[in-house]
Length: 350
Ligand code: 3MF
Ligand code: MG
Image (cartoon, rainbow, N blue to C red):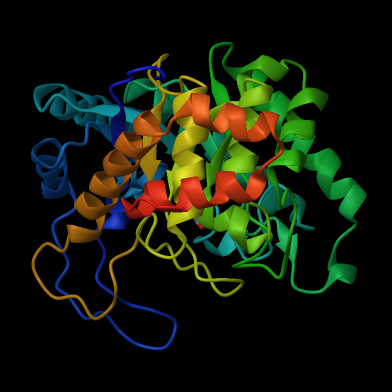
């Protein structure tokens, strides 16, 4: 029997969306941004993942002081509802200054915009009550490889990491790797890249990763193995659980909905390594199907949480002694049948 962590769950407001995709408009009415906060506790969630402009929606139009006042107000609203901010991520993929990326843009002005906005995101994070900022390096990459000097780009990324660590001595940076989309070739495509950036930094203990299942699958890697690798370095800041049907666009499907066994193995890695005992969240990053109607549409979130908890039960009842015996005998065929039947809830007579 492994640990009995009571998992805490989080998701970002963008996970309640209107169904637009690159080929068609919205299919659902927008649900008021701040009203979303009231949906969290009743569904069993207590953490909110934020982009900087999810905290301060009109970020580009307000001055620095106004932004922090707004962030403190949001903090109070969260306190009142028993919620906490898990992290704040600077949204460096929307503004005109980030068309060619931020930290790795070929334009010095754009790079300055990205750094300034990131330092502001740190202040917003502290005001809303979290010490974690997430770098999802959306447009840090290229559409054609000749467009940027890649070695220089990695040096620029490291410089930004060090600037942020120096700017706030308590802040943690969690890098969320992704191999492609929106760019063709992304810098920091995998957990290994993120962790080597961490070790190259001035204070590696404050540089960790967020591992999103779908992002690992898009890199043709196993999400559970990526999580285990980060845990082996004590660098799993958070997870973004979801699922992905092969090497396509980023699908953000409900956790376990495509590959139940890979989902089980992710839960097993988290369970067996006491993930969550220091307050780490089980974060979700799931999108409802465009076909789904309702107001608000949240089943994909509650379903994913339930599937995770069901898999925790499966992980806790997985007979570790039996597993050890199969390993000892090197009977992996036997281990496979036991594992699959454990998931199916069936029992073989063989
Ligand atoms: C993109 C993502 C993002 C990040 C988010 C926080 C829209 O594939 O997964 O979600 O998770 O920006 O870093
Ligand atoms: Mg994500």
